Amino acid sequence: MESEKRPEDVVTVDVQVAKDLLQKGQLYLDVRSDLLFFCYNNLLSNPRRRGRVKNPDFLAQVTSILKKEDHVVVACNSGGRGHRACIDLRNAGYEHVKNMAGGYSAWVDSGFAGDKPAEELKIACKFRG
Image (tube, rainbow, N blue to C red):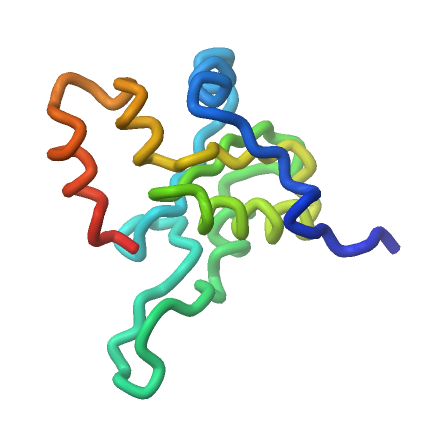
């Protein structure tokens, strides 16, 4: 049996490389928010368990639409959650996943998100987790 993947087993690419991969047809998996379908973390409102816990349905949700042979760029808000999601995806048999360094914030800072001011775009995702 293959050994479990570790953080150093995740391929991380900068936003320019991610943009190039997406333009070539690779898929994009956004794991930023509990409001989004593919959230990696759930926010808890229970005062005794405040914070984030791993979404127990994450892999089931992803495997319902992505094939293990798909090439996927994974991104969150700043890179950490995306990195952890890549580890889980790799352990589930997805070999072609890459984490986008800096997440959506780096995408915005690079000017790839559109014409709105960067701070306005970042505020929109700031409270999503």
